[in-house]
Image (cartoon, rainbow, N blue to C red):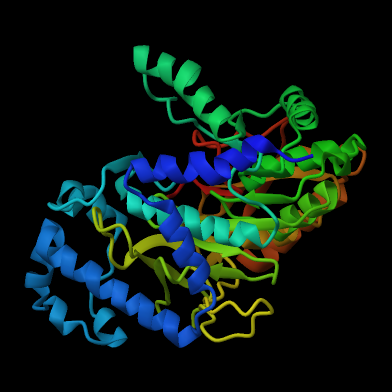
Length: 456
């Protein structure tokens, strides 16, 4: 049965709502679809052309970059090659936080939206985004989703954390929560289910809502969707009857074990959407199985501290956000080296990002000086029968507490011994306590951290 609401949104409501804010989604979508047919060399040329325009604008109209270029003795005309581009200093979150207003352009093409990051790495960061850049972000997202048969306007359920009006008060909060946001959700054919606190009652409500609402696809945090999939699976509910075409995840790392159960339970593919408020949507999964970077709208780099390192820091430059440019911005995520030349079954010319390992704060530093990334624990704990959910907490350099939601019928003392023995074998002498808990809380943003350190 044709969803006429979706068709109206696709053709009229969505593109014109962005055009009214001077974003012109249609032209960006046309550009995105054309760019996927370019060669790798043509994409690189396009990137460098856009980069040159961005740097020229930043030099002329953005106080921070005007001062920075003078301090390092460079001008935009000096950036003639990619090697020249790499001479520009890497930008940190601390710098953006300290000099925040100096990143605002004195010449703005469109109105700006301002956002605050979730603050999961520390103090929230305030960023501004132009409507042109937001249109580019939507175009990159739906270019990828189109490959899965998902279009703008299709009915979607979002499982997300804190809503926009959580930290407002009084009249603004009442209007936002009771009128504006519900109306906006209705207009754009979506429904939002909060996941800040998850109980079995909440999960049952989510399941019942999905049955009644019949979304085309589901979007949300991977941990929240994983909880829901486990709940549906445990109760033997027929999730195939929902007819879900796709699940998209973002906002936190998608682990292989989460992807496996989501695909099995919902009987549909799972696509990873990687990005942030600072850099927009930087990479999307495609049916070819790759996480491709959106090279026509974002320049991605992976920089290692030394050539021997397996992973490096992700550095990004958002090309269309002239109004608040962040050039060579350290997003503080870790990844293996980008694959710039590879065979894609879809013929896409974009780089391949093998995986997002996680954030730098997901690393554990030990008393002996070793650094172990948190993904070690996913390989260990997901293989222990009876541990449904867990969170590893480093209390001291040599003391760990693992909070675990346990299925008592499957969990045994041998499982605890395996965990402790293997951690001691890898880390050296450490104290490991496994604490059974009924549930594990997410962060205030709704995100869930598998590994936490009290030492950070």
